[in-house]
Length: 181
Image 1 (cartoon, rainbow, N blue to C red):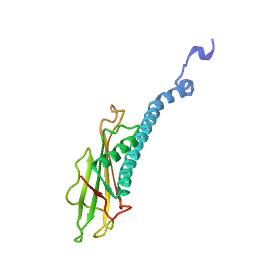
Image 2 (spheres, helix red, strand yellow; image 1 turned 45 degrees about the vertical axis):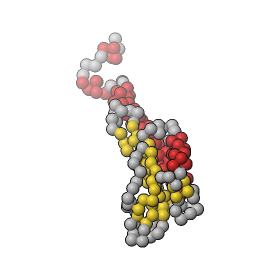
Image 3 (cartoon, one colour; image 1 turned 90 degrees about the horizontal axis):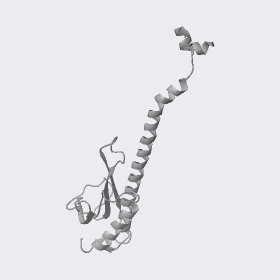
Image 4 (tube, rainbow, N blue to C red; image 1 turned 90 degrees about the vertical axis):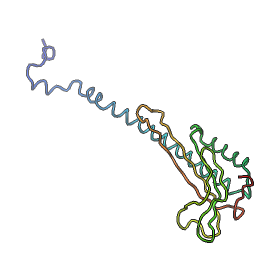
């Protein structure tokens, strides 16, 4: 009878045996590696949703800033384009607002008009970053919020709120007018 067939007679012989070490290491590392793989895939999905939402925000500001005047119907069409840009993500959780703001001679930035989908239109005054706008100047301010809900809710049950704000100067006129906002 061979030594292998007889088994191990001493602890020293058992400790030197290397049979099955790779299988044990794989069994220990595989769950961690699988979890890291799915975590990276989920992180990439969330990043892609944030990039799409940012693109919608900048596109709404850009299309609004290119106009001389707009109506609610035209702004609604611009927002519908934004919903298409969100694909393949659902546009349902997307909240978007575009506003025309002007800094008066006292330095207060006031909302001229605002149009929104999924959130309330802005009214009153707005705080903008320092040095962005001078007295008498106007800006288009576009804001978006997207509630990203992970497809792996069992592991990440919370909704992540993604936000973005863009400021653009009107391109053709000093101030973009909305006729019925």
